[in-house]
Image (cartoon, rainbow, N blue to C red):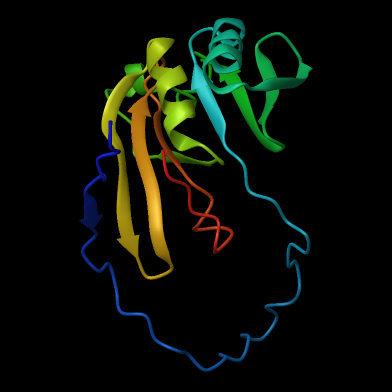
Length: 169
């Protein structure tokens, strides 16, 4: 059977791409600068152990450390953290407690189709199917899901972070 090409979705431009000249740092900008910084995410969940088990089955997450209600996990070397709801701190509420989330976790992998399929098989709800998108850096394959804890995930190939690494499902 011949392979049917997937449709390519053109994304609307978010902003114009322009070459910018370097901007001089503001006075004191180098003081307190975070050299070698890393950004990660702490997901608030009702049950950290159950969530860690789900992320392991669905996304291949491995435990870095486990303090019971707070866990460090990684997916392909990218760390993220889980923290159980803390009633004493209203700033640490799960998406279910607040009725949604304003954050999307981006996961860049070699085979987004397989990761998405495994997450859905483990109970994730499809947010957007995996599709090919035309982007300024070339073809980008991406889709998304909601995990059972209310967190919004996008799964795509590595092209936004490593040009020339698009994938086809």
